[in-house]
Image 1 (cartoon, rainbow, N blue to C red):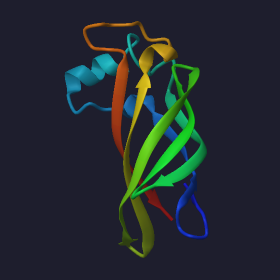
Image 2: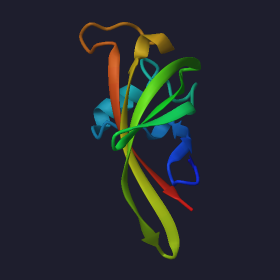
Image 3: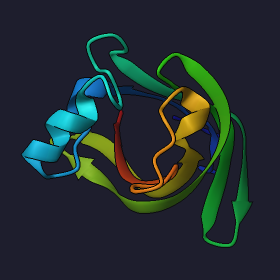
Image 4: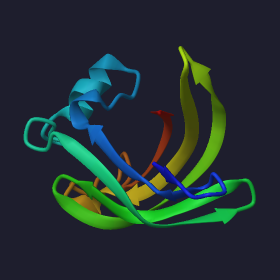
Length: 128
């Protein structure tokens, strides 16, 4: 995360280890990380790199490239500051957000039962 002089986000690059993605259901997590979905052994990371970040009210809209299963597609993520502070003498910042994407644009099979459009909610902690 890079902040501008006003303390607002201007650049964000996220790398998510595929093997750490969780739905908080161990049996479902095993399936999600498997070959039918995230294929963690073959694609060990998911990335999001911003092209632009704009402020809308109390949130930020981050437009960027989302790479999943080796395929890149544009995605818009909504971000909000959730907390700031100091821990053990180090500054930290927490942002929460959500993004929606069509998983079939990344090579996953279409599935009417579970749907193709996925909304992901996330929390990111940055430490200085």
